[in-house]
Length: 353
Image (tube, rainbow, N blue to C red):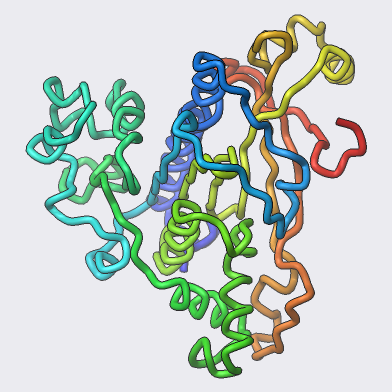
């Protein structure tokens, strides 16, 4: 189990600080690829973009849209340390899908392979994020982790692509249920009905309905598996079905999505933040045909029923009680507005449109 910063050595704290800075950089780029680039792709093809409805952001929401090739989808795993070989049966990374030239040259529509060199796979390379963006189109997941093969400490590398997540849902649910003290030995010790509910609750724990598609299932399964490490990790999942980018980390669950804003809403927000409307648009919003869009994040917290009990004793499952609650909402600045802070923006439970 990963450790809080206060329990780390000095060198581990340095690694944690570097990891968090790099994660922020990666998040900015992935939000752009998932949401902004997808949105403009819809506009370029003359296809109406389906904005996320408020009900879809509420825990236990089941509503989903159809998959669309215009929405950029991916899974990116970013690990603070190194994922050991004992995990290879479930997070499948092998020499055959390592990021080396002889492997990536077989990829269709990958324009960088002729100019590829090993330095491109390191996070400290100026072209690293461009390289990641090129590889995102490959199905399955990308794995970024600390590179154990270099002498320089704390150097992060995109080590593997085409990484499959292969851990049974029942095993992941059993792992979480043991951690939360709902079971002692195995998933079925209280019968099939409780086992089925605990599997559904696994999805709820990660902000999804249990009927979601394969990519989101793979992402949350990976997040649960990586909890076994003694370092932190982050899983980013971009889903066409939900039109969201999910982020699973030690801080909990977040969903990034686009909202549509009209002139009255923009004026009210700008006035509240003591900005001129045009300044607010330039720093926070992206123009469309006759409206603007903004990047919003909804972050969620786990309830007392999805945290280990303080007394450490086994407890009885109460299915009716929610495992997830909305914690906060932000409107993020444009990915190029580096000096601007996110602003509070209540939307999911607001009465207005």
